[in-house]
Length: 245
Ligand code: ADP
Image 1 (tube, rainbow, N blue to C red):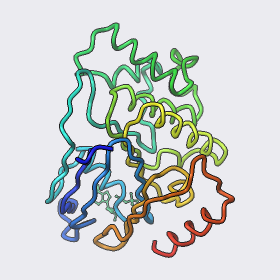
Image 2 (cartoon, rainbow, N blue to C red):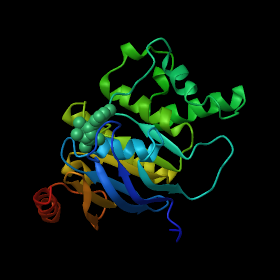
Image 3 (cartoon, protein in one colour):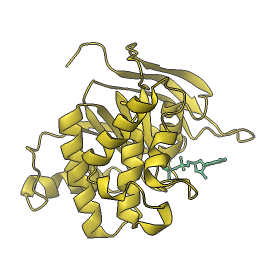
């Protein structure tokens, strides 16, 4: 693990235009290379807003968001996976993924290689010529992940990506995400209201609470992987974190 964090967030505050109360204020945290960090908090606390700030989709009201410099050709610093996958209905699956590569100055062959690579990683190669409306919710999430991975991000931002799928699919997607993370080694910043999900996935869990919201806990999760949801320590950590929400 390098000494300079990959992502540094300093004194970050955000209020929506026309709203005087900030959603959160003076947030400070960092994410190391290859680290998996989950942010948990109740509905409406500001998790999505924070992630959209870090993604560069909305500008901070004050404070600083810095990513350590390292530009590789044909990559973006950040990839984003949304809760609703936002696939373009008029493009086939492969074309939806390729669309995310626009502006990266890749040749046609390189773009095709990227698409093949991420379809294989997400076990979706057989669906490349399908239309978005003809795949299931879980498959759409795999494609959302594939599209984000195609830009070779150093930091993958995930906003409640599995909350709209059934419980069984959700667990499968969690395992697949962990396998891909181990293989590719990007850092992940994962937002969820589900403590079980955060404990199953993350190296570190940060808890957001209050109005304006603050990070009230930042815990390193020392459970060995693969994690056992039935383990006593898993249950005690679940209760412990739930008490601070
Ligand atoms: P979470 O992701 O934790 O559920 P959000 O970041 O979506 O929370 O929302 C945080 C707060 O900001 C909520 O009070 C929400 O109503 C408000 N909010 C979210 N989006 C907007 C917006 N576009 N304009 C004004 N307020 C918003």
